[in-house]
Length: 393
Image (cartoon, rainbow, N blue to C red):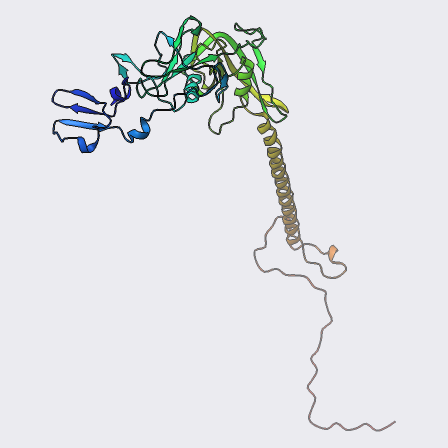
């Protein structure tokens, strides 16, 4: 099936014979239908699904004005060359693939438009310099050819070949500076503070090392930036809930591709002697001020008042508890003194001696001294006999 997809003619299916491991391409669109197939226990058949739509020939007219400039969604500009091809007729393969043609690695993708083909070129690594696009599929299903050679050294020929049409687009690569307004080379300043677009944007401090790349890293994303400063600013403002940008690799030469700014989630190890600049985040801070070694000072600023408030509440609680405990102890002492003193009876009670000396405990019932009183006599009960009345004086 891989052989079918990279065939230089339209392929509608394959027939694989197991007993001798041979593969036959089915290139007749009319005969390659299920009605025309004969069952064979030794042969496996695979047909292209929806061939009328997948293998439909596209409009062969040039989709853009000749020599016009068209820009991809990633920002790379292309100069359009209608009905033009380049020699040598080669392409390069920026992706891993198992497909091959004539014993060579083959990775010519299929795109529905020249614009889509230019978009693949903008995202390719290493650098893609131009594309040729075959709309009528006259050279097979794969119709987008990526070029990596210097176009100035290539020969331009007509794209109206005997059995297919080709249009071309050449990348217009921008000139990049090294952070000091100079193209290429090493920045003069090897320390950089990112600048936030607003007062709330985070900032970061970077240390730069020239002619150094990294291997064994974790790439958050790849994008095109005009300078190493822009690349570092993007790293400082990168927002993700699970990963943080730890540094960047910036390729001012763009030999590695138009996407020349690599945001790293892991720094890996040094890979020197390359035309790249490595910059590592050494500290971060909020744009309002404050800093720290990799942490956000705004979080620390918020945590300070919260922790201080909680500590204040705890201190007040401990003080109140200590005061109540001291008060309870004093009340207990007062009750003990009262229990060790005699009860008061009358105005001269303070002169009465204590029954128990201090520190002694009673061993029996307690007695209290009272004042002496004159004896009292019980009156006789009244007699029932009548008493004689005394004579009047």
